[in-house]
Length: 346
Ligand SMILES: O=C(O)CCC(=O)C(=O)O
Image 1: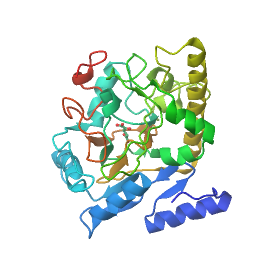
Image 2: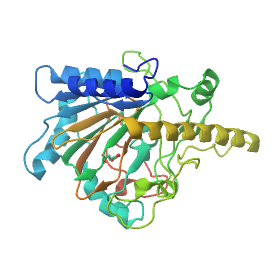
Image 3: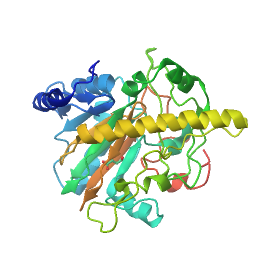
Image 4: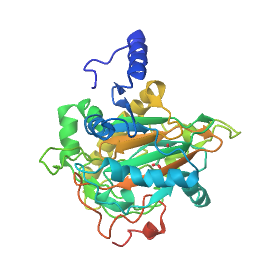
């Protein structure tokens, strides 16, 4: 699905227009605009899973069309309906979380301003190595302006790396925990290479990587500023290190220096991929549309927005991941009190 030679100019516009008409995924470089599948129509589940597995994300349309409670329930039901066989849902009791509700608590903690955007990230790093392998985000109310999503495909991004860089990222263990005040919450410890390829239940290799955001740095971007906020333009993050990957404490000074340099280079690549994707590969969810993402493979982001925006989130752990986290799937949001303590207990 990823064009081997990135098209340019008019060809890009034409490709995007054709993709929209045919409801096909659209990808340029590592940016991915997922295909849409109508909930309940024909073999919708098969089509949605195929898209999810081969492309890394899918939008399921026509999910839930009632009052507030119906959307919350519909979000909870969707992973159960989608992951019925393979992948098989392991976390049927994972709760649903209102993204719009969490923002108030995040604001109170100085970690977020409702209406601001989010840089590309994976979800669930509070679980350490047991981050959920899929994320569902159901839109109940889109914002009047802004709030578009952008997806960056890790597989496509890995293909753009030279062999040496890829090998380094696949073999050098680093600290992957979100354990300090610069993240959104304190999570469980995790370490290993940034790019991993664990086996699924049938022995296929599947990309597993994660990107947590340094919130203090993210606040510098225009993303932090809601569209209706007055005030000066925000300082950009370009060239600054925004991820939370870091050297392990036992690295020598020389090793730590090399690790920081290589991680900064990857972070820079992500920033440029995101900048191109924001120009050419964003999409917006309508009421009743659910974005389902392979959270091991694809980073997701959201542009700043104006007014009310209601989204429901469910994290899912499936038979094709690393099993349920120790203690179970207790939360589908990063700010849960479950993870409030530094290096949260299991
Ligand atoms: O609001 C959105 O569209 C995305 C939210 C998000 O990125 C998240 O909850 O992790």
